[in-house]
Image (cartoon, rainbow, N blue to C red; front, top):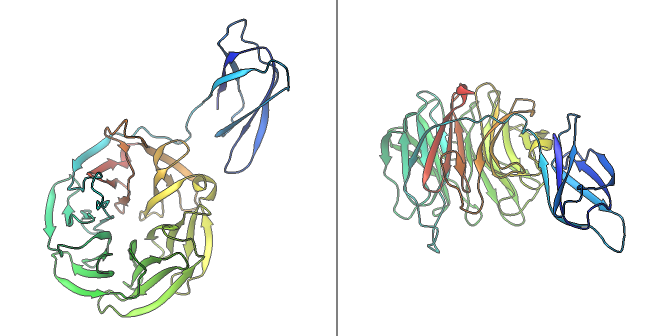
Amino acid sequence: MTEVNVVISGNPGGRMRVEVLDSSSGLGREIFNGNADTDGACPGIFTIPVSENLSVDTVILTFSNTDQPMQIDAVELVGNLTGFVDLPVFWRIPIPADSLSDADSQFPGGIAVDPLENSLFLANGRNGLYRYDVEGNLLKTYSVPSESNLRDVAADRFGMIVVTDNVYQWYISMLFDGTQVVAGGEDFAWNYPKAVAISPYDGNVYLLDESEETSRIRVYTSDTGDWVRDIYLEPRGIDGYKGLAFDPDAYLYISDQIEGGLLRIEPMTGAILDTIGYLELAPSSVSDLAIDDHGNFYVLMSTSPDDSAVYVLNPQGTLIGRFGHLNYDGSDWSEGTFQLPVGIAVTGDGRFVFICENGFLTAYRWEEQ
């Protein structure tokens, strides 16, 4: 923060106290306590310069109780967004999409990177399954049932992809060439399964399943479709958790939408070992997450206090960068600005980051920071 501007539209000169606060940590301090004089201008702007290096997102004003109270038109918080990189878009391509004016429309599902060739798989809701190269060229369109609604996709290092379909309420394992290996899963809640991840340790498939009463991760074998175990989480209701991803050490991560932060899970026992990124992610809503081979987290936002689309955290959960913009009212949909993005994927080396939203795929070259 560098300054706070208070626009006073009536009765300037009254006594005012100004505090600033970081809503994530609860830390704050007073930056002004006195008469708010606008040098006779009415309306006018009362500026409070701040020289200390403070990270804040909230301004609190307190006024004296007088017969002629000040009238406030607006408050502006001015400063620099820590870690923001004005990263240029590498490419942006249109993808088949449902019209959102259609009552039965569905958003696209998820995306995943082929760890061997860095190509991109797109589970595009009711519009099919596709594969693109890192330049945005369409490589393959897969054959899927006409009534399917593909919610997510994951890929492993052995030429296998797994796709979730909440119409048939199952997952499908197939080779990269489209040869189906198995269709499995059972007893999922309505509109599930959604998020999917493949363990780099044993190749088992991890699927997010939620109802109003239960939140769990169901584990199956990718080659035979046999149920292995369930990992139960604190119940959060529908869409209480988002995203599933393994780090290079085969620990499983998921975003807790209610408490904030990323849960680190021991996949064999289901024990929650840690919560990271709480201070950075608690005031936001997460859409998806991805992890590169260095253990860095790429967290896709549906909302964030600073309207950044992607937060990048290091393996310890500390914010190291952010890029892209969110727009909520449809007034801006230019390159690098996202409307309700749903999926994110990153190449193992962290060079390419892909984002999926309704109607578009966008790619960044993160190395260009």
